[in-house]
Length: 315
Image 1 (cartoon, rainbow, N blue to C red):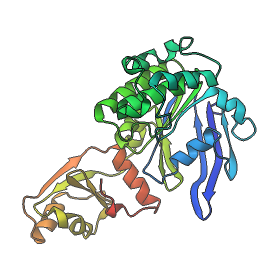
Image 2 (image 1 turned 30 degrees about the vertical axis):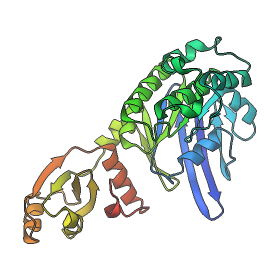
Image 3 (image 1 turned 60 degrees about the vertical axis):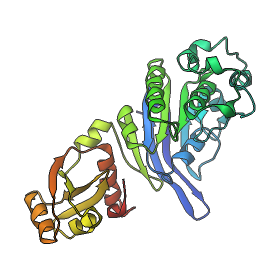
Image 4 (image 1 turned 135 degrees about the vertical axis):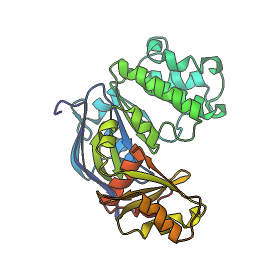
C-alpha cells in the first residue's frame, strides 16, 4: 500500500525519559476508516499530533497525501481536518461564530461548504446562537466535527472523539463517520473503546507506544488462537487468583461481570475448572465457552508483548 493516504515509517517519539512511540509503521489507504485502539498512554494522541504537524518525530518519516509532516507542514494543514481529544473551540463564541471563524481561516464560508456538514450541523443549527460553552457533550462533539470539516479536508483526524459523550451520541457520531467515508474522505480515529474497533475498516491495536497488530477487526478476532471460557462463582473476589493456580492457564482476566479463562493446552477439559474451583470451596460455578472479541485479542496481545500484567487488568 505504498500509495497510501497516510504513511508512517519507523516513527519514534520520546518525552525526556518516556518513550511515547517506538518505530510505528502503518500505511492507510485513501478513503479508509482506520482506528487506533488503545488505553490512555498508548501513544495515540502523540501520533495524531505528529500527523497533524503539531509535533515533530524524533526519528522516522510520516506523510499525509504525499506531503511530509515536517517539510510540508503548511500543505498538510490545508488538506487535513483535526478534532483533538479535548473540546478546543471558543467557549464564549456562539455555535455559528465558531463555525464562521474556522471557515474564514481557510478562505471559505459556511454557505459555500454547507453541503459538507449539513447532516451533522442540522442537529445543532437550531442552537446556532448558543455559546459553545453551554452545549451538551454530544452537541460540542458535532460542532467540533463541523469545524474540522468546513474546509473540505482530504484526511480527517479524530482523537478520541467519543470520550465523555453518552451512548446515543456515540452511535450517531459513528453513523456520521460512515457517511463521510462514503464521500471519499480518509478518516483516522483514535479511541479507548474496544467496541468501536468493530466499526472501522482496519485497526491498529496500541499499547505503551507500540503497535501490537494491524488488521481488519474480523481478521483479528478470527485469529484468536485459544478457546475462552466465561467463569462465575459465588466467590468472585477470589475467582481470579484461584483460576490462575490451574497449571494449564494461559491467561485470566476480568471481563464485565465474569472472569475470562484461557488455557494453553489443546486438550484442555473445561470440567477441570469446575473441579478445581469446587476443591477451593467455590459454589454456584458456571463455565461457558465464550466468543472472542477485540478486547480479548487486545488482552492476549498485551500478555504476549510483556507490556502489561494481564491478570491485573479490570475490564
